Structures are given as structure tokens and as C-alpha cells.
Length: 510
Image 1 (cartoon, rainbow, N blue to C red):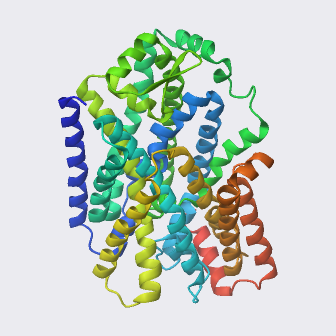
Image 2 (cartoon, one colour):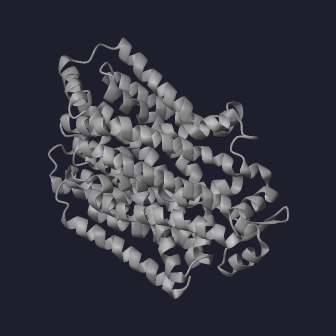
Image 3 (cartoon, one colour):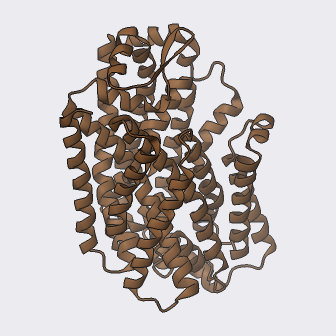
């Protein structure tokens, strides 16, 4: 890495830490630390939700998948865009209103407990436990992405790069909580957006235009040009099913809860979906154009000068790690100062998700375990510090899971995304739209969705993939919904108090 690139990169990191310190001075209680006191404007909420959603997957995982397998992988982007829109359209406003009506709930487990008047605390504890399980894997995916960035940019060993990247991210999340996360996500979202628009345009121009790019990719592998041909129906359905995950992602739906007013939802939705669709286009075409660029012998020679590892596959020069295509572009196509900004954009994508995941996980420890079970009379300051130490502890576990240099970002994200979507997605939807849902129905649904994903996508992944060819999200989501509905119908009706609150929450400001 050149000196100007390094200086630009370091200035960015110092800026993020400064934001964390500024937010630290504005964080006085657990509501501030976990939800920012419900005072996010639509722009910050939208870009924060988008940035925390997309993570390193948008700049590393998705371009890498397109680079390796072609346009058939773009179905994931289609599913995500549709799912995100439906989430903003149908869940955001209701959840923002309902969480305030339901005893000012500040976390997902908090909302579920208040929604069903669960004095046993079972629903809260189960929900918090599921959050900790899957967020540990999700955070681990970000650690892998960060390690790949630092490894490629600074020539470090994988484990050394892993520790450096983790240290930066943990620092400002530990200090500033939700406000630090939201403000940094806003800046990071702008950086990610600009990078994803600029990089593929410059690369296409370098190759000689769009037609030339398509011709080169077609000569390498004609199937890379096809979204449908040669792709099974099951594969398309599995890719589209990624969109179902949005309804149950705690780090995304907490942005809905943190909006200053339900009336801000339409503006936030427009900003968020525009950002997302254009960002997905950029990521897809970065991977597509990358195949044409790297295969050129002249370009390959230039790439090796920057330490990019290449392999020969059937006479075609290819990246040794397809998930590093965006990193390679940022180093070879741009002036060192711009390269530093683009590398900062990659780190932005990684940081913006990990910080949100660590924050939600720490809130589960502080609010849903420590306060609910161990110390019911704990002070606000005490809870904030419990949350901060939980950030460090969870991050260390995630680092241990990421210690294998063969880990891939997409695989870890896929598993965690399915876990949250299946465990919480149907329950959040039913909680907001079905008065008859009961506490026992919610517990049955969460447990069913979680178990299906762990068994289908973890323990028996190879067998299930070969037999059914389905992403674990689909059976997990459907069986969670089925279990919740069936158990609720056999259960006694919710109390009159719960039903009246449901009516008030779902009609207010709608």
C-alpha cells in the first residue's frame, strides 16, 4: 500500500473513532446506548439500516459470487431488494408505533415480552439466546471480511489482520453505542454507495466499453451471461428467499424502532430503497466486469504488482480469492488517495454491520439477561457498562470462529441471515398483523425456526442441499409460521388488555 493510500485510510479510521467519542458524551442511559433515544431522522435511519444490512457482503461477498458463478447469482439481489421494500412498507411504521405503545420497548425481546405480557420471562430469554447464537456467526463473517481487507492491503498474515480489524470496530461500538453506530453508518453508507457506482464504471471504461466487456465474459464462460438459462427453479427460489430474512433481522428492525416519528417512514423508505437498489447494481456489475478485467493478460500483470494472488484456470487468469475483486479494483484503477477512500468504503461496509450486530447482542446481554434475571434493580450506568463489556466478549468469540483463513463471507452471512429470518420473521409479522397470536405460539415459532435452520443449514447441510436443493430459510420460515399459528389457535385467546393494546397500536398513526 502506498503512503498516500495509507494516510487516507488512517484519517478515515481516526474520524470514525472521533464519532464514537462524541456519541459517548451523549450516551447517559440504556435507551440512549441501545436505541439512541428514538431520535433518528429519516436519512440517518435509512442509510444506517442499509449500511448495517449490507455489510462486507455487498462489497466482497456478492461481487465475489458474481465473479465466480455469473449473473445467476444476481437473483439474491432481486430477492433482497423486494424483501427490503416490503419490510419498510409493511413492518417499519407499525413496529415503530407498537414498540412505543408496548411499554416503550427498546429491543426485540423486550417488545415480544411486552406484546404478550409474558411475566415468566421465558419468551425474552429464548429470543435473546437466539440473537446471541446467530449474531456470533454473523459478526464472525464481518471479522473474516475485515481480515481479508487488511491482509490484502497491508500484506499482513490472516490472523494478524483479523485482530487489527476487530480492534478498530470494537473500539467505537464500545464507546458510543447506538448513536455512534448510526452516525458512522450514515457516513459509511454514503462511502459505500459512491464506491459501488464509481468502480464498475471506471473498470468498464478501462476494458474498452460495455460491449467489449460482455464479449470477453461470453468467451470465458457463456453461462456467466445468463440469469435463467442453466439455473434450476430451486436455485432461483432459494436465492429469492433471501428477501424473507429482512422481517427478522434485529439490527435492521431496530432502526425502525429508533425513528423519531412513524411519519418519517415514507421518506426513509424512499432513501433506503434507492440506496439499496443502486448499490446492488454496483456490486453485481463489479463482479461481472471483474471477470473480464482480470482475464486480460496485461491487466493480470498489473494486478500482480499490487500483490494480488492469481491462479490459472483452463488457460484463464483468475483471482485466487474471488471475494477480493473489489479490493483489487480499488488498488489498480485509482490514484492512491482515491484508493485509500475506496478501501475505507470496504471497511465501512464491514464496520457498519458488525457494530450493529455487536450492539444488539450487547443489549440482549444487558437488558434481557442481566437486568431481567440477575439484577432487576441495576442502574442505567451499570447496564451501559454491562453492554460495553458484552461487546468485547461477543467479539472475541466471533474472532475465534473467524480464525480459519478458509472461511468465506457469503457462507457465514447466509447461515446467520437464515437463522434470524426463520426465528423472528414470521413472529414479527404475526405480532403486528394478527391479534390472535399468543405467547406460546410465539415461543413455538421461534424454537421451530431456530431448530430447522440449525439442523437443515448446519448439521445436515450437505444432505439437505443434495436432496432438496433449498436454502434453509424457506423451510425454517414456513415451519416457524405454521407452528406459531397452530399453537396459537389451540391456545386460549389473548387477554382483553392485550387485544385492546393491539388495536390501539395498529391503528395509531397508520
